[in-house]
Image (cartoon, rainbow, N blue to C red; front, top):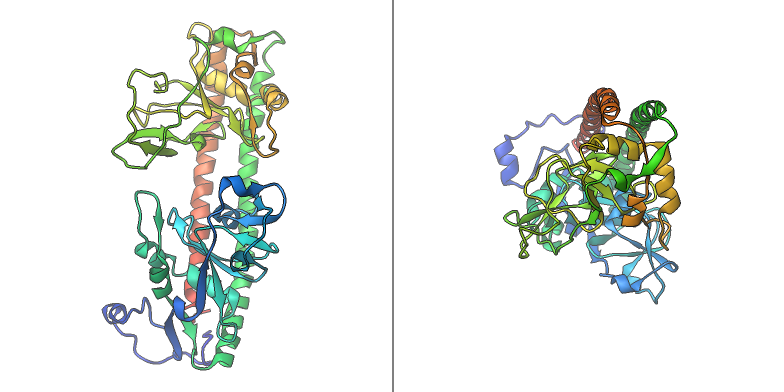
Length: 429
């Protein structure tokens, strides 16, 4: 089916080189044209709200994280808002700075009156020519072009206003506004119907992922049920007191020293890719360097994530751990490091962390070094600890394989979603 003039075009398709020379990424249906984004809307940038201006009341400030994840909490502004930075339902927002592939994109705002933060444009449309949701999908199908035009350092980038305005979008019958809007709305309706099916598939995949996490939690509980009731303070099996790390200013120059991000310890797993870099002068004899086998525990995070722990496996090396992580080293005659991590995942340990975590914010909680030292730890010999670790490692290997398959399925869903958009803007839906 062709959503153009009602009939498939019979014109010969020019070679790719000819299309690229004309700035056309692909051949469009008859009557469609490639139109620069700047001809379809006026881009208004957000305001750089300072942390000192954040409040718990007032208008919500829309940041990129609020666009990518509706569950993320807002900061608020309780001052006099500028009309220039106001956002209302049905406004098109385009994020233009951050990590290409995750931060860039267009969104249709539907969460009420708000204020626009920096690094996001409000696209003020000519509604007689452009359907808002059509423009959102049209921009997102050209994300590769946005990323190609982006500037910036390793892992970060931004696209200038001029470059973004030059990104061309596929527009049906631009010289006939009424007809163009009719086609745009029909395409949007088709896209939304297909994406609704994709959303159901993603929800099912998320349910399966949650079930996978519960498999490991259940295995930990079953293993820990073998232990007796005797408890001692965790400090009794540690080789010295836990220590906070160091959080230097980072410039993300790969030539600098690697510094872990807080996300390096998440879900009781260690993520070696969660790093940044610093060129600040470092002390090679300081305490903040990691050794393979060190246990890291998150001392400040959301209520669900504070107290998560993982073992540093040795990569990257050398490596600095940040202030929001606590490093622990066990006495090898008294404890197995991986058993300690599994124990910290147990219901008993998580209840202890929840009871001791504190903080004025409902979204960020902290535990102290003293809390970590006094955390109840079972009286159990190292041999039994290692036997339990071997048992749980087997389960973890199976869970890891399930997670790998789920990640592959998620990639396939992403590819299908992108294919839906590409076919829509080729006139093939």
